[in-house]
Image (cartoon, rainbow, N blue to C red; front, side, top):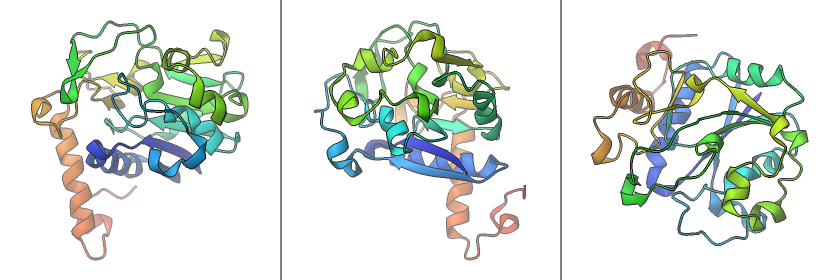
Length: 238
């Protein structure tokens, strides 16, 4: 069973469900998807949300290895994404390099805008967006315990100070394609609406927006179908 944790924020709840639907619809193997909800973390997470944390899961994402019991492999995704391909090869790619503690898409860019969704400040720092999709080798991430995640600075966490550079594996950028920062790419496997998803009025016409709306319609159609069979829901059986 592939373990996937998706960051959850009440302001983007629809984004979570649409992403989860897209992951499950394309998956060729069983996938377990858990919303990473701050309200459910109890005493594991004890820090106050800071002014630069644009979502409730800005820091809680780093609890993924702990929540996985430091066993096996786990994937973390921001909720403002859409999965366009089978997620299984992503995990297999990481498993092929078991000496790495975490695998990420190693973006090298400077954000084009000063603000992003809901008029929030666009924070700039090295390794930005590396942590928006992470495949954790949980056994090698024991430094990410509740005390450390609750006390380390945001830059320490998001710049991966908790591991060595040699233990950070690189994934192809197609697995975390930054909408609005990169040009349209028909081969993108997971697209990331990092500036703002099409569920916000200001971004309804962004690249891949129609794909997101189509996925949402499929999800709603399945929910409204009494027996939810793939044929009646308009989904191709896998």
